[in-house]
Length: 162
Ligand code: MG
Image 1: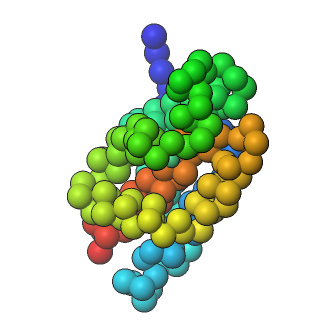
Image 2 (image 1 turned 90 degrees about the vertical axis):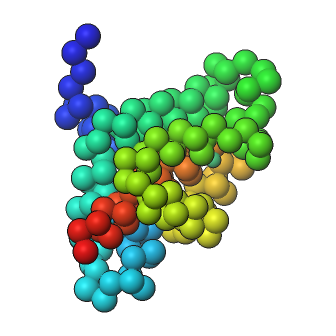
């Protein structure tokens, strides 16, 4: 099987959009956590790095996998007991975070630190994602971690270039 990651990148970005998240939203989180460290940081630099993170095979695979699981759960295609765990974003499930680690792992320990920080403060669109995920028949269990991990990875790329 031949896999074209140029095509899959477009698919991943489309899927994020369908789940209510644009690259601008993700870059907004990156900007939020980087602006206090770098006086010269701009939103467009953050967006550039978010775009770059999304060219990585590991990142594209994590987006496609996580969002597919959210969507299948909403559609009722996931059997119990997993269905209830995902629908209720059960705190001890933890696989959503583990999948997101496959994104930040590409960028070393700074990526992991940034991810923890974003997750704790529910920065930018993450708060909105979590709020929508609590609505009936909505599941954003994987989406919040994936978005946080991409934003954290973009921040790590910025740190590595400074
Ligand atoms: Mg989650």
